[in-house]
Image (cartoon, rainbow, N blue to C red; front, side, top):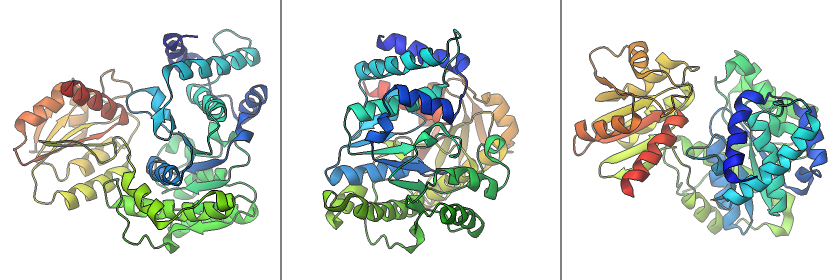
Length: 415
C-alpha cells in the first residue's frame, strides 16, 4: 500500500466504514498480536484540555528521558499529526505500512465489500500497532468522544487514567446533563488503576468517585496540588489549571515506574516551558500579532474570551471565525466576538461540516458591529490584516478544520 492509497482508503472509510464497537476492536487487536499489552498507556478523557494535557505531559516525560508516543485528535493540517513519538509525527512510509496491517485484518473480519471499521477505529488500531513496533516507553492515548464506548477504551489495563474538564459537547451522544456526560467520560476508569481528576464541581466529582470506588481506583485530585512558579509554554490562564492536572499525573507516575522515572523540579520546569500545542492560543505572527485558537465549544470559547481580554486588554482585536454546523453557534459566536472591534465570518476550505459565512453572520446577529463574510478563509485572513490597526491583534478562532487551513495559508505565505 502506497501513501496515496492509504489516504484514499481512509477517506473512503468516512462513508463505507461504520463504528463497530469494542468487541470487534478487541478481536482485531487479537489478530494483530495484542500490541496494546506491550504498551504503558496513559488514557486521557475530558471535554476540554485533553490535547493540552498530552502536550505538557509528553514534554515532561520526554525531558525525563522517555520515548513518548502520543495519539491525539483531531489533526490540524494532516492526519499523520495524530501519531507522534517525542513530538515527531509518523512518516508517510510508516503510516502506509501500519494502515496496511490494519486493513488486512479488517478485511478478514468483515467479508462484505465496502464494510469495515470507522475512520477513528482504524486510526486507533494503527496507533497500537505503530507504538508497539517503535517500542515506546509510554503512550498518551487521547479519547475521541466520550470514553465508555470510545474506540480507545478497548484498553483494559492502562497505567493511569486522566479525566480533564467536563462540559457540554456532543450531547447527542453523551447526554444532556453534566452527570450523564461525566458517566460516559468516567468509563475509562479501570479496576485498580489510579485516576487523576480535573473537576472540582461536586456533581461531576461525585460521579467519578462513585465509579472509582466501585473499581477500587485510587483518586488523585488536581485541586490539591501547588503548581509553584513553573512557567507554562502554553498561553492562557486556563493552562495553569491544566498544568495542575499534569503535575498531579506526573507525581502519580513515579511509584508506577519506580527508579526508571526521575521527575525532578528541573525536568518539570523544562517540560512545562517547552510544551507546544498547535492552534491553542498559538501565536503564528508578531507583526501583526496573529493567534490561532480552536475554541470549538462553549466552554472553550469562554476560556478564549477570558484569555484575550486579560492578555490584550485595551488592544484593538479583529476576530476571524468559522464554526461547524452541529455546535451552539449563536452563543459561541457571541462569546468569541464580545471583545472584537470587527468580525470576519468565514469557513474551512472544503466546507466540511462548516456553517456558511453569510448564515453564520445572520445567526450571530451582532447588530452594528463592523462585519464581513468571506467564503475563502485565506482571503478572510488577508482582509483582517488589511483592516486591523498596526498595533492591533487578529484572533482566528472556532472550528479546528478552519485552524488547519489558516495554518497552511500562513505557512504558504512564509515560503
